[in-house]
Length: 82
Image 1: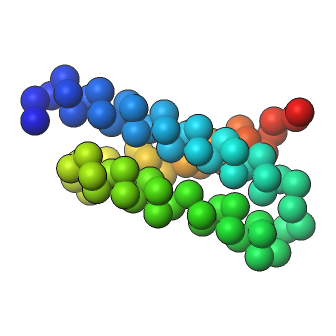
Image 2: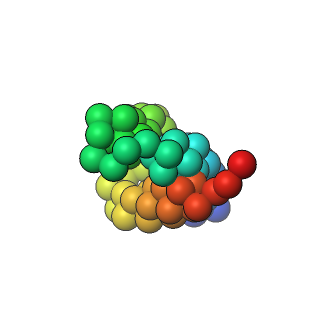
Image 3: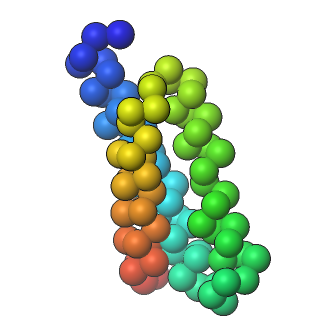
């Protein structure tokens, strides 16, 4: 894979990770802290992100970027108001 296509995939997956976690962060903020639903809102997106990273054949080097994108999505989702 060349550098430009790898960069495009990394940017797309980071965006996807942030968007998924925006939704879960929104719901996490509206559940009781440390409840089962709160725990699920934090951990449910992880398998989807893992599968997306695995199917795109990206190495483990990019995991910190996806963790940062997930944290960003959770924080921004928790601050959203509808």
